[in-house]
Amino acid sequence: MADRIIPSPVQNPESEPFYAAAKEGKFMIRRCKDCGKPHWYPRALCPFCFGDTEWEAASGEGTIYSFSPMRRANYTIAYVTLKEGPTMLTNILGDPDKLACGLPVKLQWTVTEDGTPVPTFAAA
Image (cartoon, rainbow, N blue to C red):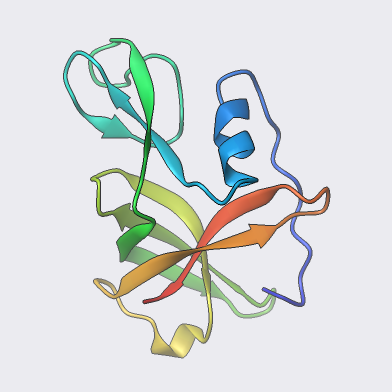
């Protein structure tokens, strides 16, 4: 994706702390204080039980759950299951012919149009 400039994310009060941490190189997810389940995309209320959530540092490690190369546009869209549990929609960097479901991946920050980093992944 180095040859592509990706659009900047739309930020809101729930996601601003995520992007502030991202600018410091920290990958954060939210975990419910009540049921204990982690989730992605960051939101104040737990999508499982509607309990309050809190930020926690994530490892940036995961595995490819599913992927689809967009060969004409030169990127690969994927679902990555994080080591902490949630599955997130993201992009995978690198040769799509070397990817497979279950392949371990590691976080790689990709800078957007306005300089905001977004999480993408590459083979570990």
